[in-house]
Figure (cartoon, rainbow, N blue to C red):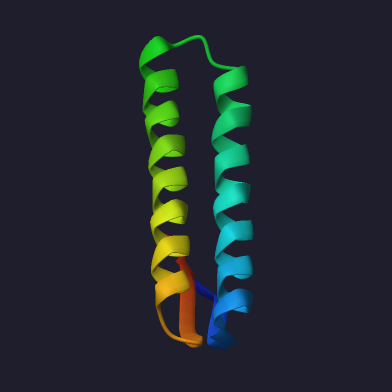
Length: 80
């Protein structure tokens, strides 16, 4: 099953707002899991993922500040 979450053209600010909110939800998910884990290996994996998401968001902001005025976004969730 596939669910289309985003499909359209947005101003740079709108696109950045949408992506930022999605990334923040994912970061909060990992942080909530970290708070309840005892396994050091799982904690480190989730901490690494949070850092990667934060870096991706930083890089995206930098790219969009220097880039186009609008962006096409498409995000689809594949459930297997």
